[in-house]
Length: 120
Image (cartoon, rainbow, N blue to C red):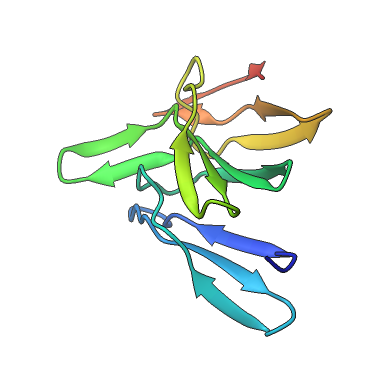
């Protein structure tokens, strides 16, 4: 697989999507990949060892808006998703970073409560 410089996932505002796409700089085109297991918006993404991790977000559906503790891993070699262990608290609009192959989730919010905590 060619180096992917950018991915886009999920939805926006009050719309949760399961869309996941990647950009190939060689062809200058976006390509649709398998859908995200848990549709959501307001999520963050990072990369560890050639895999893309989607963290947190919010699932907006007919039953209401639910902030998500989810973390999903996309492996481009297998072209499939794996659901990872959830975070200890749901985090919408969370910031993520990677240090020494460890994913850190910082801040975010659940409903109207803003988190000052972090976890790895």
